[in-house]
Every structure is written in structure tokens, then in C-alpha cells.
Image (cartoon, rainbow, N blue to C red; front, side, top):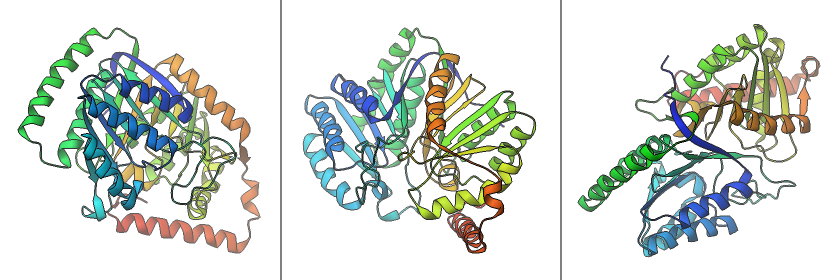
Length: 389
């Protein structure tokens, strides 16, 4: 099992919700001097989306090289088409990931921004307002969406930039002028990395359909396998495969506290699939808490007050075996403590699920859980996720 490649001397700042993330993101874009790489799944046509788009266009108009990727399905065909014309007019290079599903159903679910190869943002936060849940139907929330990203400075930024460049290249041919620009960027990046002098060990892990099919899942499995005290995992779309479920159960059975904070209430089918896993997990000693206060969209975990991750990868078949994803993994006690504090507040606001609640579930509801699981597993197999079980 290949470990995460941790790099020392980074600064990693936790950003909670859009209220912390978007001001930091736009400040970095407005300060850009050379280049900005930007990739996201949803880029909404709301106040937040318009503000971020305006920042990217301002950067391009003052001579910064701006290369932007949006997912065709996540952002929506109509929105992508309108935005594409506006971006090109402003001088922003814009490429669309897998339009009309021409390359199968794979999506880029990643949320990445790299500015001047000096600062990078990675996380689960899409470009949309905190107070709107469903970008298609604009369902208003009673509280801001619960989500996280990180701002990274130091040598790890070079790895994130390298992946951003690789994705840009995969989606289109690169003219000679762009290749020359990339050479110049590399020289600047090496200088920035050499000058970094901070302390956090961190790694960047991605999931794709080539060399990194299982990278993110392996990072989780290795960390859980080494856990001695606690595992706190927060995720909105909980539908893990057999290996992940077994790791959770085995970790709890050897005396480690394992708590899952699961977002519910967004999709009834997803909730039913998650519920189908509860009885066995609860029987093995795993604690399950459902978060119902607002939309839980974060994909984060803290293990043993030392290991933490923030990123775009859900614990489901799409994220672990199909979508393109990106997470930052951090080994730092102070960072883990900060993230743990946020998770513990959410746990206190959640509703814990107990095993006895499933002992008297009605026959029709139990059948519904079973059908939901079978449908989900069948879809995963159809969509080339052969290992999902």
C-alpha cells in the first residue's frame, strides 16, 4: 500500500465555509502577478460565482495568465456556455471537463486553485453561495452550508500546481506559447519553494482513472489501520465499498473510538443507501451521528489528533472509484486540533443513531433500504466501478 508522500515545511490554514474561503481566494487572485490555475465542479451564477468570475477576469485583463476548468455536468451546460464566452472575451483560458459525457460519465469533482505557484487552495467548497443548497433548485438553507477548504503555502504548492497543469494539458492541446509560459512558471515555483520556511508536514493526493485509481482510499485505510485513539470522519454522501466498511468496523472492534458524522436530507436515495450500512457498523461499535442542521458538504477527517484530511472526496463509489478528486493530508497536531474542534461542535448539534432504532424498522422501510443499496451497487458496477461491493 503506497503511503502519502508527506513534504515538510508547509503552512496549511483551515478555512471554514465560504465566509472564510472566498475572501481569501479572491484576495490571492487579485494579488496574482503571473498565473492562476482554477478548477471546480460547480460554478454557480449567483452573487458568489459572479464575484469569483469577476476576480479571474480582472486578473486576465491585467496580464496574468488564467487557466480555468469547470465541470460540464456540475456547473450545467447552459451556465458553462454563457460563462465560456465571457471568460474568453476577458482573456481567461477556459476548458470544460467532459462536455456531453463524451469521455464516459467521469467528472472532475476537484476544487483547486493555484496562484503564482506560491499559494494553493484545495477543499470541498464549490463556487456558490453558502446559503443555497441545490444549485438547480436554489433551496434556501436555515444556516450556512458546513464545508471546509485549506490554503497551502510552501513546497507542497509545487505538487498541486503540477497536477493542475497536467489536468489542463489533458483537456486540450498546448500551443508553443503556453509551453514557454510553463517553463517560466517552473523556474518561479522552484524559487518560491526554496524560500518557504514553515513547519507542517502535508501531502497532496488525487484520484483519477489512470495511475491514481485508489490513492485517496488507500490514504484513509492506512491511517485507520494505524489509529490508536480515535477516528472522526465527516462526509455527506456515505456509501463506502467493502474495504472501507471493513476498515471502519475493524478499527472500532480493536477499541478505537470511531465516529461518523453524516450529512442527510439532501437526496432520499442517498439517505436510504447510507441507512442500509448502519446496522452492521453500529453492531461493530462504530458511532453514527446525522447532521440535520444544514447541508453538510465537508469531506474531512481527523485521526489520533495528528492525521487530518480536507478535500473533495466523498466516501462513496463515485468519489472513491470514478470521479476525479483531490485531498490534502496533514500531519500536524495544531491543525488536527483545530479541525477536531469544528467536528465536535457539529457532532453536538447532530442526532446520534442507535442500533435499537433499526431493530423495529418496518418491513417496507427495510425493503426500501435494501432496494436502494442494490440499485446503488448496480449503478456502480455498470459505470465501471467493478471493485465496488
